[in-house]
Amino acid sequence: MTQQLITDAQNTWCPGCGNFAIQHAIKDVILRLESEGIPREMIVLVAGIGCHAKMADYLNINSLYTLHGRAVSFATGICMTNPDLHVICCLGDGDTYAEGIAHLLFAAKRNVNMTVLVHNNRVYGLTGGQVTPTSPTGYHGKSNPYESTEISFNPLSLLLSAGCSFVARGYTQRQKELTELIYAGIKHSGFSCIDILQICATFMNKTKEYDEQTYIPDDHDPEDFDAACRLVREYPYTTSGKIALGVVYREKREVFHVGTPYKQQEYSNTELFVRRFIDGRR
Ligand SMILES: Cc1ncc(C[n+]2csc(CCOP(=O)(O)OP(=O)(O)O)c2C)c(N)n1
Ligand code: SF4
Ligand SMILES: [Mg+2]
Image 1: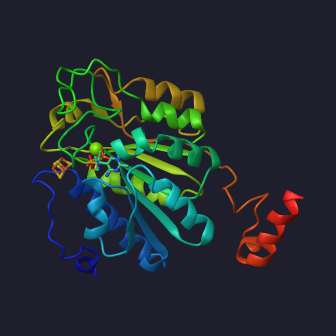
Image 2: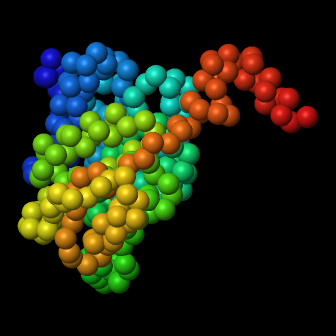
């Protein structure tokens, strides 16, 4: 069963790439869901474009490659068409925090029922290590002739501001905890986003820094929004500092489309759905 989930497609990730840890964490979560009675046919993997996106080839589940930056839009369509599916997005930091940032924030605001895993290696990996919105200040990538002077986005702060109902951070060298986070994200009702500090062995190997700086807070209450805001400010992705892992924030909120004003029942009745649009235009 386990072997069947990893396809026999030729794997072209570099040796030591953190994507392997994410692949195996997802595999373990799928097996756990299956043991709970959720068949893999009810899971859809939506991938962006980049090294991370090869997950669509390497995991044997329903999956699709989309357009760079637009995966969340595709995923939203899937969620709205069949709300019974569990939708997991494997996205890059370039993908999500640059071209796709508007889609990410609006899906968070709307609380669309999907789980977004950001493979945050802090470079455009597939195209050769260029600067992304979360590349550290001072990074000398292939797209800049000198060291970058820009500050990073703090993606967790952005997500909290956008109203994301489940915000978490994982690390590829802590696979057991990462697996638990992915499971919790999928179980969350609404939009869950896990920023995964992913080792890029070729262009951004921050293993030493992350090993030394990551920790799991023992007294953080993920239902306390102010505490979550304070926690994510500890590490603004620009300077070094303590890096908290785990669920930063979670809240129960109405899920987009399943709740009012869009009733699931009406969506499944195409004629009624179209009629509502026509009536609404009069
Ligand atoms: C609309 C569009 N813009 C740019 C590209 C070129 N492109 C393909 S992959 C990629 C980098 C992906 O980086 P990231 O999303 O961080 O994923 P990683 O490779 O690091 O996993 C870029 C810029 C593209 N294919 N389509
Ligand atoms: S370039 Fe980086 S992210 Fe891409 S496969 Fe190699 S190690 Fe992984
Ligand atoms: Mg990247």
